[in-house]
Length: 148
Image 1 (cartoon, rainbow, N blue to C red):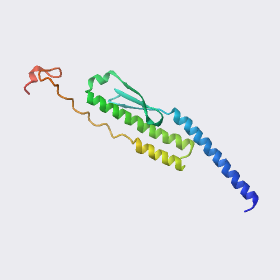
Image 2 (image 1 turned 90 degrees about the vertical axis):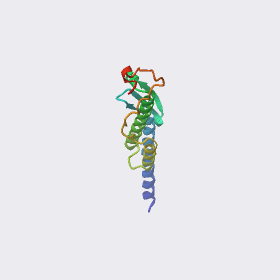
Image 3 (image 1 turned 30 degrees about the vertical axis):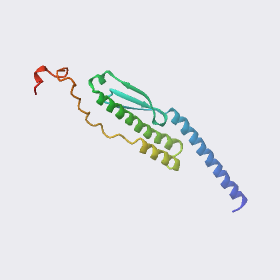
């Protein structure tokens, strides 16, 4: 290997490092702007997550009035997990576009994000509503059904 070959090799490394640095900078900027939404109970509960998959907003529509407290709690968790899984998916897209899909850092970060925020299971049936504490409370039933 002569001096010209060595200079060309160093120049190639430098160009490659500059491209990689630019890709990581672009990735960092895009990830800082990343947010994802997830919903549950036909949109009654919506959770938004920002960078790192941390929830930044929770909103509910009037539909939650038809849900029990247990169902609302479950819906919040379901919506949050859906938003975090979407965050993980979009993080993978950003990294593949900016750094490259075959880059070891991309593979590691995406694998960790998918492990931390796996795709949610399909929405299960909501938990049954609890019985009222007062046996004479017929707010959900007719008084004719008391002895059933």
